[in-house]
Image (cartoon, rainbow, N blue to C red; front, side):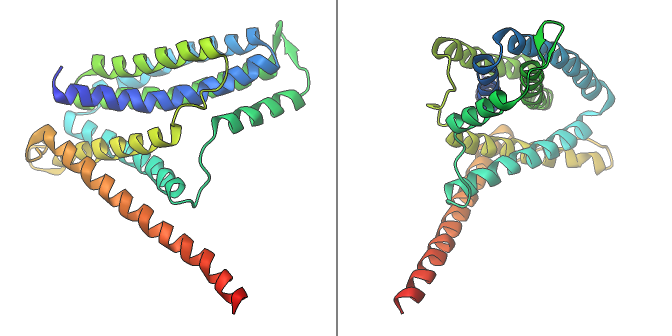
Length: 264
């Protein structure tokens, strides 16, 4: 594969990996505390719903929008999505927001499952079914969004699907083997990297899509073409590092100020 294809695969793999880990935590919590049968039926139902959603969304984006408008829409959405992830990563890295902990998430889901009342319908534990369905579907929608937008904008759906599929297979295999949340995965670091990738690709495609407003409506071209993505990635990384450093200094200043007043 080309360098661009490897970058596309890495981006969809990393982003999808995070979503699969979060979905797995929910399903394991429901299975261990309520009913594996109901949790797995919820997973299966969510997958069927995702297939239908993927077909409809993919067809609509691929056929209804011209290339430049597609790049503008997809790029803008990816940029917004990426900046949300990047914002959380910056706050966590600077100490202004607690790090995400899969073990803690598992404990919260388990506690909720144990405290919920018994509601059985059609031979299923309804609580386990609904929570598993919602968790897998919502996380899955994000994976679908990432795969479709990356694949269509890069004109390489197979590579985008391959990246997400590999992530899902690895998470599922490890999850079945250990039967516990994958807390050993550096999820916060992954989210930081994914935020950088989404923001970089989003900026790249959004700027290309601005060409829709030109006379011919053709996409704009970056200097260096795909190599420009690396420059954007470096730019977003340096900006995020600067923000983390700034927020850390402010945090330390606030912590030192009360201490100084007490000592005075």
